Image (cartoon, rainbow, N blue to C red; front, side, top):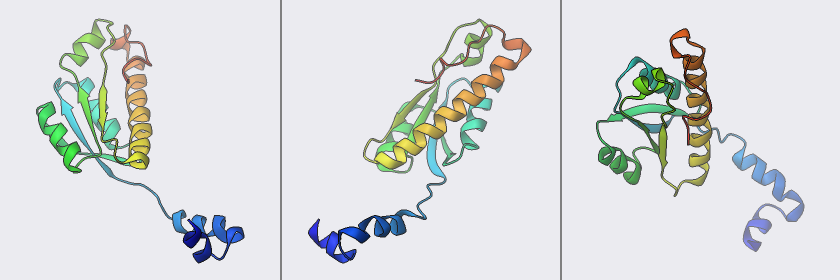
Length: 145
């Protein structure tokens, strides 16, 4: 730590040195793997919302959780989003299905950015579904955990 402080010009200049280092650190387009077992219009709206969320892109799709796990563990994806089978049917019946997100915990900052972006995207898609007249039984706030 002493070498970092000395290289920054002493303790008084350390905060400005750190600001200079991290000033341009904008995280964008973190790859997210999507496992959509529903394949419905409702699940498509979730995938579209995730893809358009700031900081992440739904760049890959897997047909099973094993493929998504491999992508996350290998670093090809920072997270995997699992959309369960019968999502749209459950929404239409007034049930509250869960969209589950799996993270690689080794990347703390990227995980936080991804988590916030995906949570906002799922909330947005949920609100859009809840506003739809055909989805009257759906309640917001329960599809992300």
